[in-house]
Length: 310
Image (tube, rainbow, N blue to C red):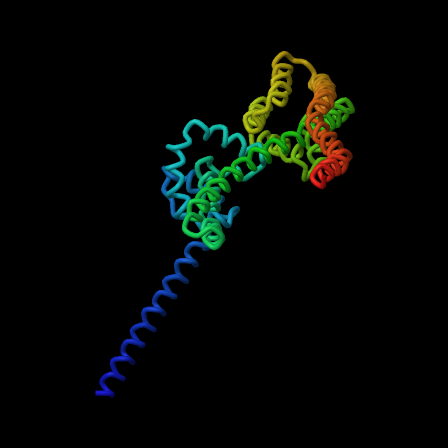
């Protein structure tokens, strides 16, 4: 009786060990296949999209790890955020992120981050609030996705600000080099080397690379305008393209546009300085109110206590 029971226990332990070993093997194989970034097999009809996915797997560890989940969420985002996807695509380009991201996949990336944080939010909310904490965890996860989306917009806006800040100096350098006898490509290459690592150097480096690959100057500048999608840069690129069509010397166009950028920057600084007084009005009122309370508070308290004592 005891021996049969012992044998049954041994068989159960062996079966459990086998199942545990098989699960560990399957898990290890799944992780290896997920992290493995060898190029996928492709047919001619899917060549370009698979190349994009392969490059994105190489550039983004999160895309490589959570690729199955991102693939599931991307079509849902394409339906739910159809109107905002073009705006998200422009922000991805303006923020300097990998050009291999599609807007729906990038939104899926933000949603995956929110889902990963959900268990942490749930643990702390349940610990502090009990069962109602689940609703708070859901709200905090949604707020996380919203803030990540706002961070993308803020990153794009700040990078555009950096580009417009340095662009007059790049145009001045290109103008001086062209007036000294350099060609447009030579002058642009020197300007890109001078501003290497900065957003303006990166963007015009892409322009230079596209021209080297066979695009015309107008097409490469149009691509720059589409990537950044900013009013000031759009006006500058339009003036350069128009000057090239009309035969105006590019050095003269660059110098004019650099002066225009400096004037706009000065006007923008004056506008910000003018708005500063209005923005400081509310903090000033609060500071004055708190000062009055600190000064008059002791006297008011003394009168109140005297009335109470008598």
